[in-house]
View 1 (cartoon, rainbow, N blue to C red):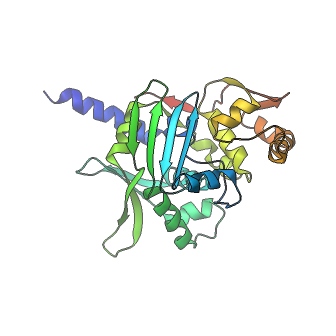
View 2: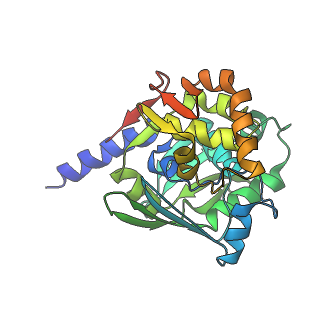
View 3: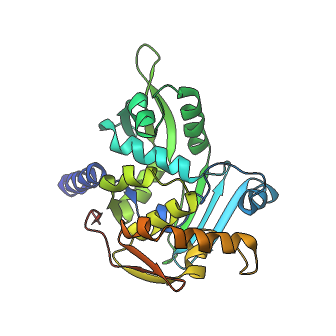
Length: 267
């Protein structure tokens, strides 16, 4: 009588082992297009005015993040944890333990592998943030991504536990494997460009105007603003880099025909 559930869980195990994350957490901008918290940024000021809450509504749905302002750096670290995972194992309470080497993650991030205090603080931000997400088919979710840190018998930090609620969200939604592109994404200095690349990788193909794209990654701007002109110049200067991800930008429009290094998984 339990065979269908076992088969379903086995399929989900394969999905977890073979993917980086769900596409919805990229298409809906949980992770702001920022490198760090900047008190001068509109995103940060709106976050603080809204009682430490960031809300973005796009064509792909609605997302609200409460607690901490999560950035592209937080996403970088989560991606590197998945890339460097030594072991993934279910717990008795339906969470997923991911064990990894902090040294390897930091080394991949261009660090000497010793900035553990900063790394743990970034993970604490993720653990302390609640995500409320509604897809465009009106299905709603609420979860923490990380529910707890994991330590060995010597009280050494060796991993994280993904929450049961996050895993339920992951299970019900399309997932993506862009592991082979993670190091290339990490090397991008500009966080807006990082957010743009991740957004496109979550699609098979997509043509979209600049203004619509900025809204999709959570940027509010006016064409008269100096910031808007700065973004346009940055994109113009970054055309060759974007083409490495198969993203073509011309005449204020992006053209994307997919990336053979990216795979999608339903189950």
